[in-house]
Length: 373
Image (tube, rainbow, N blue to C red; front, side, top):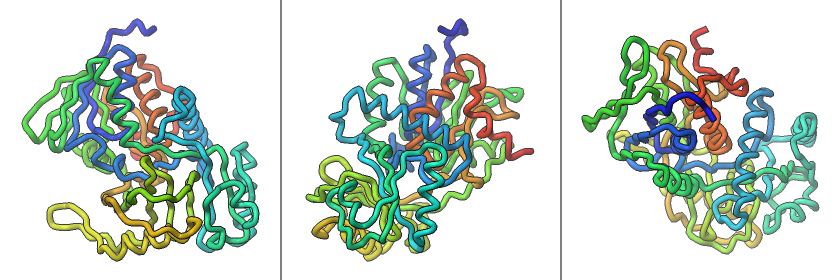
């Protein structure tokens, strides 16, 4: 156990990164106040496809971090495999204009660093992913059997049970938050609602708003966060188990017999309103669900139960931004595109750094200071 005294931490952000970090801090003996702008999981966490993977090409440190993130989910899954909101039934991928050579190259790259990958023909697809309409598939696709998905709102609810049991303090609907500092050190959080929360450590984990929060401290974190949408269908007898990533629709099962569906082809059709909210024509939602239906055996009609829009957090260089700010001590950030896959491991590693003062080597290439170099 650490011999350091327990810390008082303030965490900004009620999504998976903020909640995970808060729970891990509580496990380590810190007292924690979790501050959210509105409600828990109201941002990107509530509209994420949350595909657990490290497929395709990325830097070696990023791949290793994602693989470790998946490992933490597997540990959680093993504790109760009956959970409806966390599954490991693989992922199937084919690209928009992928030739056989491109598909083979993706498969070969994944195999080269030990990532479970199968190059499958159209006749083999149904054996790996039941209840798929193979008429929509190309001659070849890539199936990754180790991949899975998680419903992040359900995971947040699960983690908050522990948060409350360990005495965490939750403050919702506080409006936008700012980091308070004194002599270059974080001293707490102030909110638009007029409240102030003293702390000796602050964690900024508020999705696409993270760069704006640290910008007030003179720290630049460039971002390339697009507007995205996730549609959740009404319960449907789809029988789909795997995550599907295809040229016109990406989908996964969702609790209660639903499907979660998204893609990027309609991003330019999402309109921001004067109040900052987003809207899209109903016909776009219908077209997306029609594309999803084409992928499912029997092409069942899919009806939207809900759809949510907002910024998808993506750092400008695509790599996570994790760790303590160089110019503001005791202020940490957690900003990444892969919030679902990294949700558990990032909370664990950041909390460990805060509680011990030791920097974890797995985060060395993801420090926020890289943008000032």
